[in-house]
Structures are given as C-alpha cells and as structure tokens.
View 1: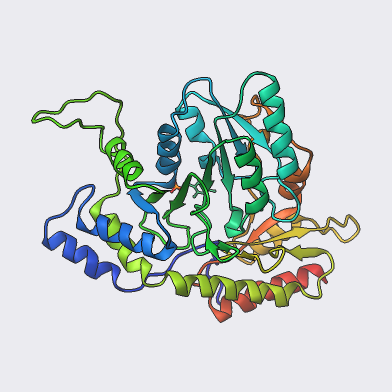
View 2: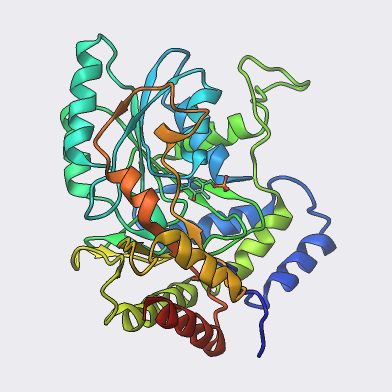
Length: 379
Ligand SMILES: *Cc1c(COP(=O)(O)O)cnc(C)c1O
C-alpha cells in the first residue's frame, strides 16, 4: 500500500510562478516592493472587486498590526478579538501595548457570537473603556454573521478589522470576505488557499490609507534627500520575488476554491451516514465558503472509544495528518490573563473538533485512504 503522508493543507503551483520569478530576476527587481508587487495588488483588488485598495505585505500578521496602527490603537486601549482563532489574530494587539478582550463563538458559524460581543462592549463601556476596535475572523474560510456583527459594531461606532486570512474566495451575500470591515486582511502563508511563501495584504477603502500603510511598512521615511523619520517605522513590505509567486498563484485561485469545495463534497458523502460525527457546513446560501479547511465535531462515545483524539490517532496511524481546531485564546497560557466574555462554545469546539486534510493537491487515492480510515473507525 502506498503510505505517503497526507497533509492537512498543501498548496499547488500553476507553473507560472517560475516565469514571473525569472522575470523579476532578469530585471534585477530583487527587493521589497517593485513592479510585481504593484501587479499583484491590482489582481487582488480586481478579484475582491469594489472600491478598495490592497497593500501587499510580508505577512497577514503585519497586516493586522498595520490596521491597528492606522486605527491609532495605543498603549492601554482595549481591542475585542474572537477567542477561537490562530494566535496571529491577537498578537498584534499586544505589539501596540493594547489589551485584548476575548469573545466566544456561536454554534452556527463557530465565529464571533453577536450576543456575547454586545455584552462585552457594554461591560467594557461601563468600566470606562470603550473598545477601540473589533477583530473578527472568518474561521476556516467560513463567513461569520456579517450583518449582525457589523450592525452591533456600527451601533457603538467601533471599527472592524476583518481577519480574512483563511477566507480568500469566500463571500457573504455575494460580497467577498475581506471587504466588509474598516480594514480587511489576507494571508498568503504556505498553507493558505494561495501562497506567496510568506505574505499578506491589508485591504482598505482609500488610496490615502494605502499610501499611509506603505509608508509605515517601509520604515516611515519622510520626504527628504536624506533619511528623515518623524514616526516609528516597520519593515513589512512584500518582496518582488514573493509577489512573483503570488502572480503565478492568482491564476489558480478560482480553481483552488473549486477544488477545496469539491473536497467538502467528498467529506459530505463520507459523513452522510456517520452518526457519531458531524461535518461543518455553512448555515445557508448567504454564506459561501472556500472550505479552506474541512472540520468535523466528534460526538464522544465512551463505550465505542470514539472521540476526537482517538480519531486523530487512527488517522495518524495511517500517516494521515489531522489536527484539533484552534485552541481558543482565552485558554492559552499566554493570553488567559485577559478579559473573556462568553460561555463554553469555543471550549467545546476545541474539545471535539478536528480539521481534516483539505489541500488542493488531494488525489482520488488520498481520498480513498482517508475515507477507509474514517469508515473503519466509526463502524
Ligand atoms: C494564517 C493566519 C493569520 C496570519 O497570517 P500570516 O501570514 O501567517 O502572518 C492570521 N489569522 C488567521 C486566522 C490565520 O489563519
């Protein structure tokens, strides 16, 4: 039996990456910024469509950090953040010396819970500290309750930073994820739906904000013959070589979304007749997911030794990678001292949830192997 490792999420190449890289090398644009960075930004803007501006950066994390800086988040300010997420959503809050306030998920989308969000906002205002921003997340590519969350944020006039790192290609009511907030952020890390090896983008709604983002991302150089700095600067710009990879990857973005959604259909077939686990599916047609990651909740059954961990081990035994869902931030040793509003939804998701191989390179043979292990396990 072919027992090669099946990974959680690997990307594929279009074949055009090399051409763009070669072009960059030939023109000696081997630095941060450059013509391919501009082209890549244009392609992202066209893809997301609407009046918006993309700033290509060296990571999604830097994009969140710059969004906080542009919103003038300062030491001691409070920023609300979805607890159920990757730590990169929350770390930049601390880069600014600000205080994260974590909020639970709800069961429909596994994302920010509108009820607990409003409770958190009210409580913080009562304490004399109105939150300065809200970081929302489209976890695993699945859109959050955009209308409800943004209605609350608007009512309290708090800007949203939309962490769309996992959701390029997803949309809500026909509008692309990453375009709803005061700022949106994308990631092109190696495991995301397209990659630039390492990279990200900040989505904003004015040319001025884009220019300011580039200013901060390139060490805040004032206009002068020499290097003059009146503000703190960062080295966050995307390199022209990474953008070359990105241009090649843009050619298969739509295809990757189709493939990942196809993976989801595959898992739908697998879990249709399995009662002890449930595949995550979006709530209704308003939610269009790129299904970057397919996730399930396992119903623990002591008699049959069925739980998330025993399934993970069964898959591992067959050299198939799977992984528990993100461990909520309010349970993390580093973050648990910060305020948290919610119940136990995120905790239960973490306890029983598993991410299954969802890469755009899964073959028919891989799927057969995965299906066999899952069927054997649950029978
Ligand atoms: C990947 C990811 C990020 C960070 O992106 P990087 O490009 O790796 O810095 C942020 N938020 C979420 C939810 C992510 O999955």
